[in-house]
Length: 165
Image 1 (cartoon, one colour):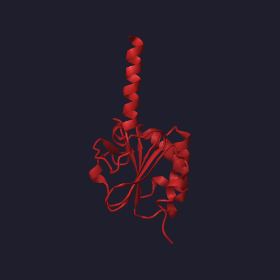
Image 2 (cartoon, rainbow, N blue to C red):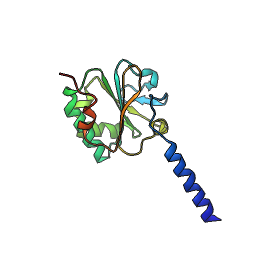
Image 3 (tube, helix red, strand yellow):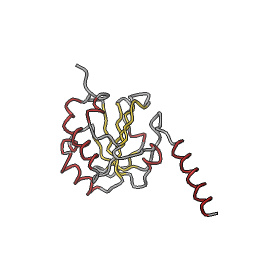
Image 4 (cartoon, rainbow, N blue to C red):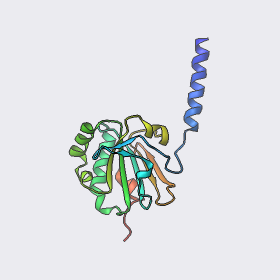
């Protein structure tokens, strides 16, 4: 009986994971907090005239550190109409350590916000599979352009964000 229940659990869990998909449009969210201001940050806070890049990261994750550093170095190549939201479930002191050690250029760029997700709403709404998890949504329609799980190379994201010569 115990094996049957465990097997049943595995079947339901597998089906649940298979059904969980990348959201085609930016899902509504309401429980995020802007780490710089302490203000609530919701889906209504987005500038829908800009391309939106959401990056779920953990300050202690090596791949996340590489991605943050790479984006920081590449900011000059990225269009002005691209907004970055670095989402973390860790509190501000750990995120500040991440920024100061690996991604200082991100701190002063007006296109970048660091967002605290105290309740794990991002995971429930966006269905990430790995850290870092990056989502690029186009301006106006807010439709998904590209999603990456576990990607640590900023160059892969830049293909969708670079200035056109």
